[in-house]
Length: 83
Image (cartoon, rainbow, N blue to C red; front, side):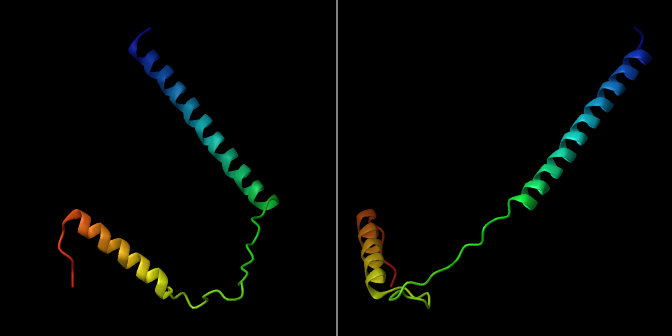
């Protein structure tokens, strides 16, 4: 087997591999589109419970708890507190 035959065989194998990968990716795109078409994602229904905070503000008790945790962490680490 001389060099020209080896290069021709290598090119054929490379071309076969590229066709296989391209075919697989094409089938994968088609499969994903079919799944998206026949199995649509269900829309989530947002419900608001009475008594919940709807204006996205954090309650004062949560702020106090977070502040206490940060203070305790900083004092245990020995770092000065920011004022």
